[in-house]
Image 1 (cartoon, rainbow, N blue to C red):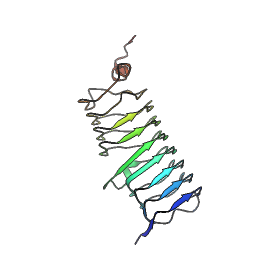
Image 2: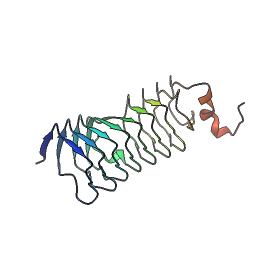
Image 3: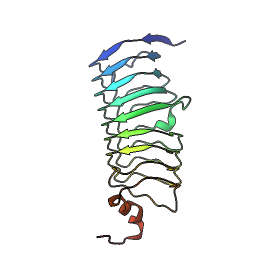
Image 4: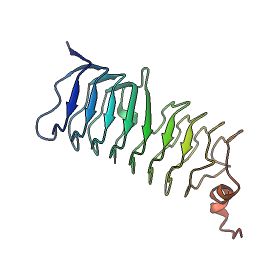
Length: 189
């Protein structure tokens, strides 16, 4: 049985050698903690906040993230599809999510704000109504992805094939149209 931990702040902790105790964390704040290559599997985070943390390559298998906010975190190489997707709800602000994978997840209304998502994999994900505000999507993979009503107006460096993705009512800036035509190798001036 998991330990219940509520309303606690964990500051500057290093969990790369000793793991975060197994538990249900509610309304907790993790600030400046190092979880890189650590085991965060089978944890439950509800209404928690991660600030300035490094979670790169952490094992997040079967972990629940419900109403979790990630701000200014380094989160490279995470496999979010390995999480428990029951009540999955998180948002990202100014995070580095390069080479992370969201394969096949239903993430309607997701918010990515000021994030680097280089090489991120969104294959077969449902990102309806998702906002990519001021995000760098260089090399991000969109393949049979549902992007209905998604907002790419301030996103940059994306390449999305309209024939392989569902883009009904998705929003793009005039400058962003190039990202929809990239596969045709045409020059737009």
